[in-house]
Image (cartoon, rainbow, N blue to C red; front, side):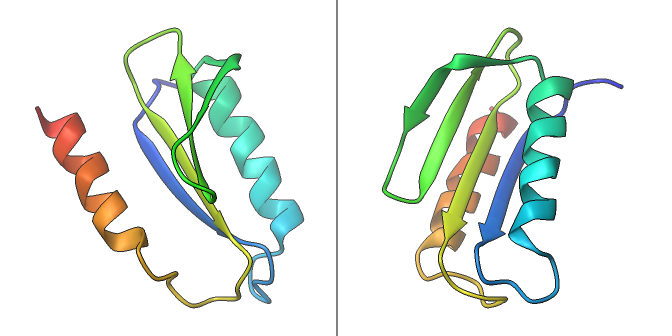
Length: 86
């Protein structure tokens, strides 16, 4: 598989997608995208960015809610996609 840019929004109390399942997805993305485990940068309280061995970003946003879209995440997603389009 070829590494791809990813912005993952995870919900700790999501009744449809258990957080345990979401965590397994993070692990697979980290492995697939060759993320550096020691290259994690906190962007906000909820969001981290992983440094990669290749120039493909992985951003993870975790909030403590359920299935709703967390307030403030949409501008972050927009910025993410603007950055990878350049």
